[in-house]
Length: 457
Image (cartoon, rainbow, N blue to C red; front, side, top):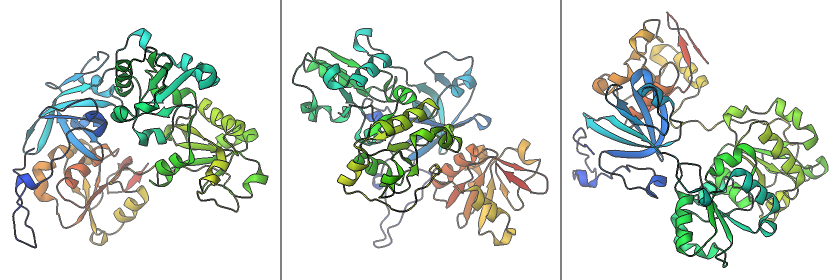
């Protein structure tokens, strides 16, 4: 880590200068990556985020922080599971959120990627894997009739967001401490799954189980992503509270009980969802592309909730779960209950990206006279875009030039970044936040015409 650009920090109480050894090192890998991989110097491991081809930049999410990396199309090497026509096509093929390893060089605080390696699918022998068709047949029978044991190898926080019905959480990172969850019969059918084809946690669980003597262990290699595209998942009241309510994660709760039952109480924010009127509910339901997490509730987690959940999955929604034990289990857990009139229309507002400003708030500030804004608008678009117009009073610095021109950006004012789509504005946000600026960015598309008038989509 290059700290040459940092001035010494002075401890106010003692007047002592902090050396480099006192500055906590930033993690080079996302926590989930460290489960299976070590990270070499000048390498980063995380999840691929926004791509700005116009500026030859991309974002890499490493848990709760973001790295901005540049690349040179003529020299960077991008390794993808499937060959791409060129570097640009290779970058475009990387799905948002996919795990990647980045090797980089650094100069003047700018990290430039020289290698981007996309995590490939895990390779297992055919007799070590289980297909979706095979697993759904077993789950329909249940563990007793199907004679199987299903284990979710993902960390507990992911399991609590929803799991395959009948699964027990046996996180791979804690496998050795939780082996008592495995069946005593080492010839029983034991199935592991995790986050999909590139995730190593369920294959790792398979390896450990075989070393313990389990002779019929398999992996559902397509994992939770494949299941949620075809079926609903499940969670219990404690998981729903921990994963969504306690974290204030946006969630749609659908109550499939009769009116006579809901009139006595319901989960806060629940929406009346009569299984016989599912078509009407879908007419005004949040768009599937928003991927709203949904929990469907009936009295006991039975047929009514399953009918609604199945209808949503068939309509293209992923992340749909049924509450195990239903409303009775919620009450038994002594969790909060509301009374009164339930909502009749589902509303979902995605959680804002860190540092973003809403279009309404941005517009309110931008329409004020320049001297009354209390913030500086920073336009990070390229010259071919800004020549058609900029917001009155905005400072224009193309995002690739930002680090070299930091002296032009006042540190004693709030900064509002924007580009044309939100992608480069977010890149600028991270670059400035990293250097101590009070900054936010507009995550939306904006069109600006000559004279400074603008429209936000």
